Image (cartoon, rainbow, N blue to C red; front, side, top):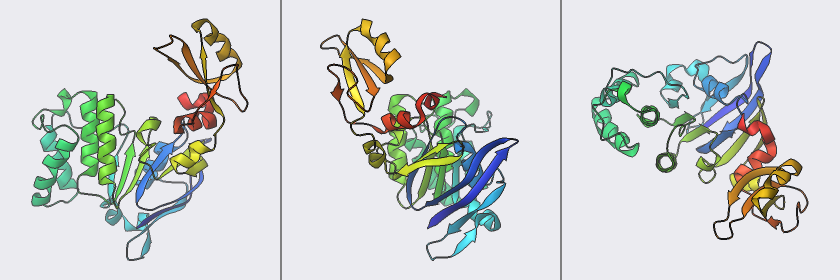
Length: 297
């Protein structure tokens, strides 16, 4: 199974959202990273046929080697998809359980499969204790988890997840991350996220986007290794922090509880300060190295 995205371009007026985007996807988890406006959501909406590309082709290759244009496949391709949009339209008067049964019907699932899957999925996303609560009464985090639940219903071959952990607390984020990793076997999973830690240890490949163009694409450890020797911790007093921020590229500030000193994490090609300690880079360090101030847009 493969999903081939070849030369996809999309503009909104004079704004070029995707510029001849090309990528081949096989089973595994792929992360899309980039600041707002980099083209992540546009790409996902084109893959799911919620948005038309200006040019380019997306094709699907089945396990038996047959390749088809997904637009010509139509419903046959959409049946292989599970989509979690960033801003879902939910039905506030539906209960959680009724909504899942409704989505099962839309996906053409038989009753036996739906009856088996729905309780299991609701348990996995920690909504099994509120099956009869109306969606309008759910918290933002619960709605987020329900949107993920409907995406994985029916065991789709391809999962497209736009900001799947937005609005979740740290415990829920870890649970959802582990669940996605568990169900990703033999699926193509594409995740757009701003939370780098959510995909650092589960992604097969990280695709870094800037203004609709791929600026890098590799396994997480390969990306972080590209800035070996460029990440430093500087122990200092609180009064020194501001001057370090003015001189250097600061990516984090923490406190050492034992010494009471501030620990300023910086990017620098050379030792940036007396007493600076070279540290192992993370994927988040590399993300900030590539995108700089725009990473927080």
